[in-house]
Length: 191
Image (tube, rainbow, N blue to C red; front, side):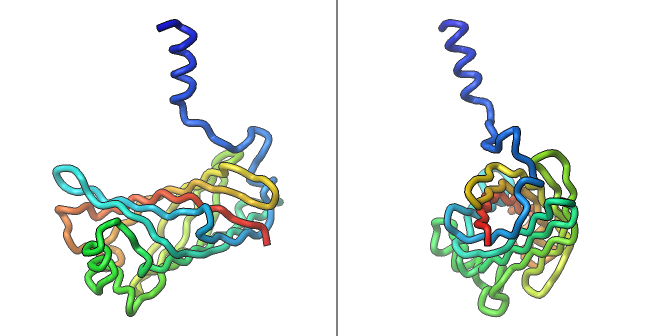
């Protein structure tokens, strides 16, 4: 294989951000509504010995407000409807909706409200806030990266780790990890 072909394959395998080098969080100033169109909230929980559980929430909404003068005064609020959880396995979905985990009949929403936003780069920030689930609230931290800004739409990639035990959802530990890994794509539309 030629050196040129190896270089091309190496370049194609590198992660590429879709945010332009000329775009920053300050350029995205405004209020955005988050919906399920193009957005996703995915999660995974590791299992002792390998495997684990992964899924997504089908219904959620929220707002992102970016302060162009001071990104630190920005805010985020996300509401997840746990009855929309999906793993591709009906029996597991029913168990997750039950009072053993989400108790979606009595606790129909999971809400995250930011308390601070700290800029860590031109297109990145750390978002701290309070997550409330099953009537319990706890501080949580997520990292966010602005992936694109175009025609009144922003796209963020957001990741974080949440301890299930803080919310009374630690059934199955230690076989299933207490840590839930979140991987989200949040598309916001101005307005």
